[in-house]
Image 1: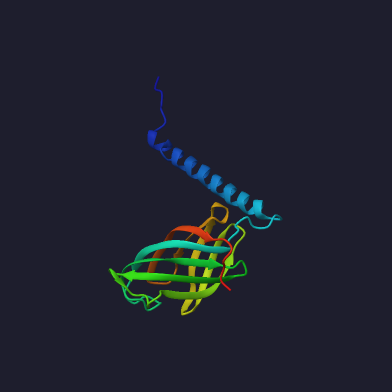
Image 2: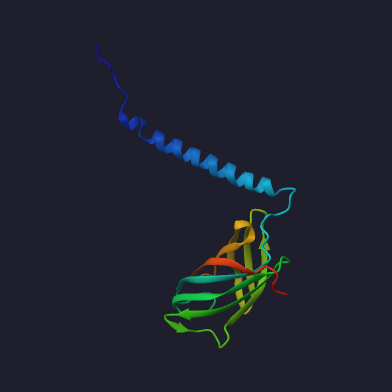
Length: 170
């Protein structure tokens, strides 16, 4: 009598498939729950005020904003007024050289805050083409995380903390 055992390779993908399915369900249910939690209650993002941040990344040659290429870092503030207006004031360093004008650079624009606490922003002064910023409000509005989405520019803004809840851009 011969007993045939199923091949080990036949079931090798089962744990991977099961894990992927569990991850999909967990992420889908989590994002659905987050959106549902905001429905009818208003957003709990509380993204009004001024946040201090540190940014770092790389600016590539030929970028859409016309920035000089190199390793970049910045420190500054971003103010969200709760009405869709954003004001950014920062000092930028590229390749170890301060490139901001005396007193720093100022960027003005608009943002859209979504019910899931993510946001997008466009910068109009100076004009930067298209959506320039994406981010998320964290810790019930005590902080934000963001990054530039300008083609040829990869800058992440981290360590953002609310510094002036009562101040906002006008």
